[in-house]
Length: 107
Image 1 (cartoon, one colour):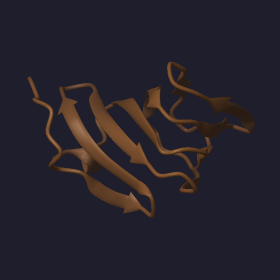
Image 2: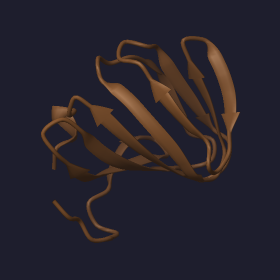
Image 3: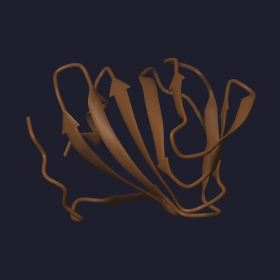
């Protein structure tokens, strides 16, 4: 599967947080998140493993109480079931891969 860059297809999921599924396969799904300064991703968990990379900006990510301030080039992995949340400190772009595929994120 190939996907060409496009500004179309983003969905507002929370105030200041937009997402777009880029590509997906049988076992993984890749999403781009556009995050606005001041946005909050509330504490939550899901059964999917989540691996991410911060392309630009700055965020504070908490995984099971371990808080880190992340900048471009930093990455993370969140185990399925782990409680996590984020504070968006600057306008940011993050790429995340979920496994297994999050059905609700399929285009």
